[in-house]
Image 1 (tube, chains in turn blue, orange):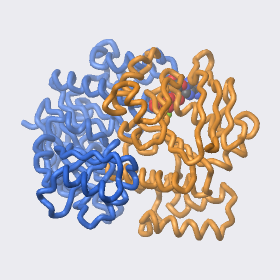
Image 2 (cartoon, rainbow over the protein chains, first blue to last red):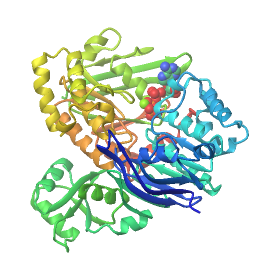
Image 3 (spheres, chains in turn purple, orange):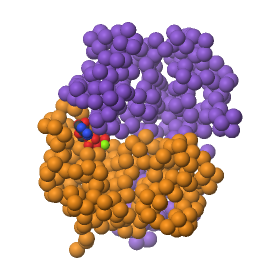
Length: 306
Length: 247
Ligand SMILES: Nc1ncnc2c1ncn2[C@@H]1O[C@H](COP(=O)(O)OP(=O)(O)OP(=O)(O)O)[C@@H](O)[C@H]1O
Ligand SMILES: [Mg+2]
């Protein structure tokens, strides 16, 4: 039996004028680490809120651990952990008090499940007497995660848990998710960081409330249909403008110190030609390489096609 | 010689006996895109709030747009724009109302506000949303609007505290297009981010560790210095040395 099932779920707002979730169906297996990836406003949060029984769908059915999200909401609430994207802590309670509060709420103690949260909690523990409202943005995220985990849920719903979290802590955070997964906890997570999307076993790309594809990150990357080049030059902004204004360019966007570019037609462009062509146009220190797409490229392409 | 728009010397902020910002010194030049990086709790927001005239330092000196952070907070506020990490727009006002409100705060005449406001709504492609509550907009749109509002009064410097936090890859890039446009028009950009590809888009980058500025240079030179392929690695090397056990 799947841990999470969405069966033709639809949810609209403003008397049906805005469709947030549009006939979405998907299943998450027990113990799976599943990513929900999509642009802002794609409907990810609505999906989380339906699954955590905080929002009623208009059409379709949803279930978690075999319990119906509408009829059996009590059973679900005790068995899942939810970290909403927006800040969910009590600002006037201290770090320790917040954690204690959430443990008590679910009839457990901090000690009982401490091993689950240890790695993350140790980082904010020196500040356990500080009020949550006075923590830095990323520290709040870490505390919120600990609070969502403290009752050892069977399914964990994480809505952009690492937004505002620094690079080093994000790596630790994902290592922790892998550990939780090893303990059999099912995890459904959304993230705007594409380097995190590839760490999921499967991801659903969602846009405007609809699922565009559900697959392993590898398979999604494999379907990238065009030749992709990474290019840089001394004056990267002139390069960007030049390339964007060129009719042969299909897409061109910044990617760290490089630009990523695809062309219309020209199926046999090779890096050498491209380099010469750019040098002829007066660009200096040109470097060109043909690369394999990353999930971020796939995502950008999908969003721009729609 | 480029003009200095921020001069910061030994700037320090203490909360009780906790030193959040520890003697930081640097200069920022006019028109520069200055990236302010650091681990969670490193002190970025705290330092930025002082430079924006929103809180007083405990010691040290700093001048922003030529104004003193102790004595001339009001002048600083009039000459800068600020997009905070948490709050930057009123969720329960419409798009137009937000623009007009913030324009009014900076004392622009109503006619001017209306004219610029219409232009802005058009360039942002928000015509259909102009009368919608800001709270109903997707995050990326809100952030683009908040940025436009922060530079609406044509400040000399704009401070952006994690403006793209949680924003998707496509919208993030559109946001950076706007940053570049503003920088090209002579506005100095002071920006924090946890996206390391964005660090590459800055002219110079600082990395704060435990309240101190541990590194300050162009991304290219930092990568060279730390023998790293990308800014991710640079950040890793520096932040791993953090002593403050809180992240
Ligand atoms: N008013 C306050 N009282 C006590 N401590 C505070 C206060 N404001 C900030 N701090 C502490 O100062 C340190 C620096 O916080 P700051 O918000 O500047 O970090 P940051 O670098 O912006 O982090 P993030 O990347 O998570 O936003 C943190 O340990 C924070 O808890
Ligand atoms: Mg901050």
